[in-house]
Image (cartoon, rainbow, N blue to C red; front, top):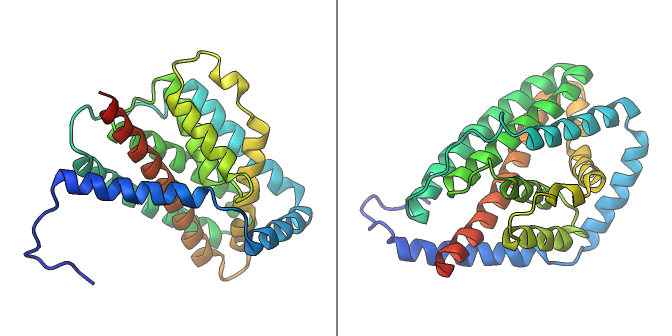
Length: 253
């Protein structure tokens, strides 16, 4: 239902209180134990992994590796200037506008790839990866954090990992993210990052959804919807993580 046009605007304090409550509820959901559905999905995933052509697995793994190299190099993904001033409400108005753009871009790209058959669908993996990584760094900047910092790149990796972790590994991924946010600058932080686990978790999460994109006739609409939802999930994870971080940093000042 649409809000009345004459409704009074929310104060910054009220907005922050609501955002904090939403972020804490989101955090609690990350800690839930895997249910029957999660366990069944995992068993299905293991079966599908044995059916999917090895070439598809290779493409996905290569896309993930390419993204991690981009994070290490940094220059292509970290150009957005951090927003140094502004209330949370103002920041998130801008974040939502940018997320909408990235969701639409990802959806269109997924639809085109889904209509193009196996080869186009396979090419969708690196394209979607690039969209999501760029979005993450832009979200970080709008919350006031610079992607040029090594610490922020580690945090971005942890957010990505949490968004696409299985229910079984989600509490561990959340703990790693929160530890990265609390940690001081560490030039060796990326050396201890488990890249293999990162790749496998991401692949396992998206393989079930993206497999349907290979189906004739329905590949285009499925590709569009899947890309929209994957981008939305990552954006939701990033927004809630940065909400908790920004509000905690403000309290510490």
